[in-house]
Length: 78
Image 1: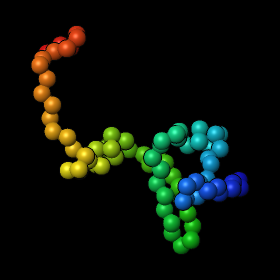
Image 2 (image 1 turned 90 degrees about the horizontal axis):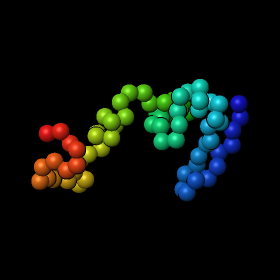
Image 3 (image 1 turned 60 degrees about the vertical axis):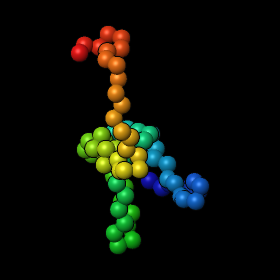
């Protein structure tokens, strides 16, 4: 299959056809692994826990302090 690279901001982008995305079980915002080895570019779905990937991005700059609440609000069971 041949696809065309398109400019996207300062980068280049490749569109993944819907049937290919479906067979890979990926969708918009799926994490992908990109590898360049000996002039060959490989793109594959990143499997694993997406939550772990998000939590790994927490640092001192974006970590907020704990927020105290006044107890249950609504129908929470405490």
